Length: 194
Length: 194
DNA sequence: AATCGATGTTGACACTGTTATCATGGTCCC
DNA sequence: GGGACCATGATAACAGTGTCAACATCGATT
Image (spheres, rainbow over the protein chains, first blue to last red):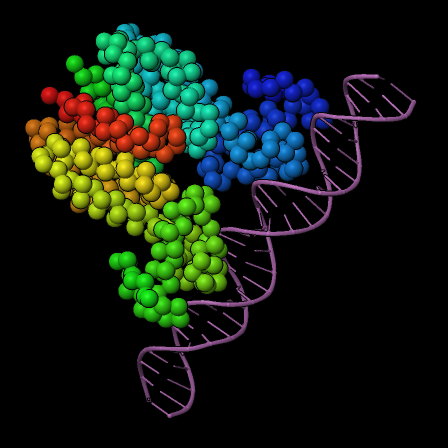
């Protein structure tokens, strides 16, 4: 059984056979059960069956690996949001569906979601503008605000803040991670002032 | 010059002279310049001029010290919010002022703010119910929703989500830490659907 | 076939949180 | 007043971490 590269780099099979992808995959796997602070380079290397310092042939330091994992997470979130929006019946519903997907993704992948925002560098732009889902979102928001660009931006930021805050508070156990609560907070027409 | 205890425990002066408070104070000071992940027990002990393991006479482990710091932060945030609300002219303005204070506090004390939510245990209840500012907030929200308790709760959660999300996204550099942006997002009547 | 550079390993260093063991010195009781 | 006790502190040590320098290996290029 060969583990397939996840769209990251060419990286032909050398001694190990694309160690870089293996590390990323092991990292994503580890994040399913390990908190972000307990994620260890050496442990990851052990999981893959390689010496600790081999990692440094593919990543300059730990943070770089983290960034790679975060980038994977962003892609996954984007796909998940897009799928959710595609299943919606109308424009407003798609907007809300994207929000719900955002929070549900966070709850489903807590450590990964946190990691995505601990690595500040390229992520903001990806989520808020370059992303497929983000682009679509922006279009929806523009419709909702009658095309006023400043209002559109405010609505986007407001919507992003609500879902991000809700996700974080639930992850941090400050709010019950309740599906119904997600719907109640997001479905509200509040986000669409007439 | 004697550093005064910060409302934590009696802790008479022994060998050091209330080491516990000194550690908390040093921790808060360190959080002004150090990221939460780089906060070191040993470094804190060094700052206070005490052996590394002396800490364990006052805190069972590192997390306990962190929790003490977080608790301090919660108090500070509560006071800050209360002061902001007291300066407001009417009920709706007080509600918004509390929200603005929340975000501004986060921007002013990034590491401390993050820490407050990394230590999940007692914090949720403190902020969302037991707090002075929270109680007041709840009263305002009840007025805004005509007394409907379920709607009141939803409004509270929605408001909390917006400010928390906005704060987090700004802290993580996903949004510009712009004062005007805070006002624009929070002042909007959006939070008070008629 | 020899060389070279990319990949992986070994060993080491400084640092961390934590524990077990020992030292100190106020407090209280007789 | 003298001695026991216990809260507080210090030392030494252990396992674990991220990272660097030096050495080994092996496929690809000439």
